[in-house]
Image 1 (cartoon, rainbow, N blue to C red):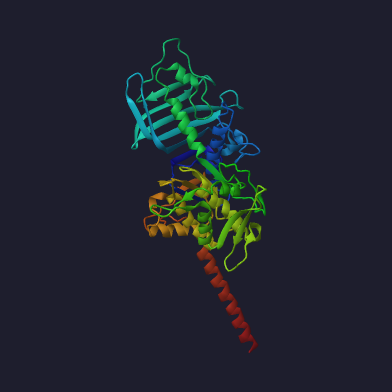
Image 2: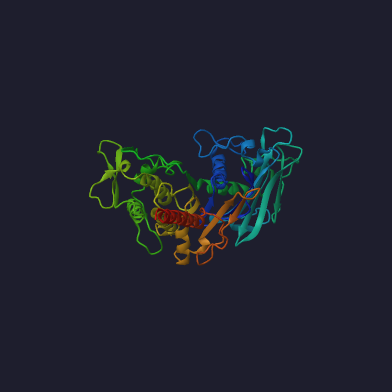
Length: 467
């Protein structure tokens, strides 16, 4: 789970400042305020980790990628190629990272890793992206155990030096040489291990970093429209897809799974959990996925809406149901310890359903499977006041601890833009509510009252004149 994040010189952000990441992390702001950029940056790093090109520092994306960010100049702050993109984050490890220094025999262990890096264009060649430095820090109980990193030599594009703190690297005998460039934006190359007697542990750092990004999945704001028939060959998709295109396949693949919505709450079949949540949101009464026939690998999604006896196909009900179904499926389908990035999960939903969706998200972070916590982290970009209001209420009611929710507001009234934390107290109150956060409600009410008064006065004047 991500604990904190900071990004500098990326798109509209000069500096996001340190973002406290919690099980439910919310980002608000006007259109084009930059709130989407935070998720885009993380997805670009995921794309880079999964790219087959080990030499590419960043992979900005292609035709079928979650994000397509273009050239470095298009993604860097102010489109100034002299700026360098810097970032750092910290995450908790699902299990303790432990190793022994073969030279001293000392044992090191940690439950958190932090990482920082700086990327820019080469000094001479203004077209090649270069990693200037990277650094890992291993922490245990919030205390640093050691740090190790690589820094590019100022006069070279491909030679780096390795430095460590609280750990003495022992060079193998032989001539002095510098290791080559890191792997992508995060990886120690094999030469670091070959050059030192006691640097094998850096491979574990690389692996833990890759596991972090394998746990990351993304669902965009534009989900595919519902269909009458869905084909499924028995494959188990990694996720519902960026646009929810694998939603029904995921439902079918998860039919044997049982999910509990909290400690000491009964585990129920995956499909039953979905139906329950859709009903809680007031969208349907019943939901099922049926095979067309035993000979065909095609399925239909049937829904019975409130007040109706008839089962109908998914395209025959409100658009909002087909748009929120991928959200629910992704939340409960994702493997344990997943980080789920979502843009506008509430899109096309009635305000009451938007409020109820917040309750679903609380169920997601409390959910358990096979007797253990799933430890899901939700990173949500939203425009919904109703969603936030329900979370505030649940914090006041102690249905969700205040420390498990963080919210940020992208403020573009300042130059450069700032990402401001919303201070939510234990009563669910927001102490620093931004002006006109969700529009000027009081202003609208006041102006409506004034306009109504003017109309009444005109009507009275006309009556008096006619007499």
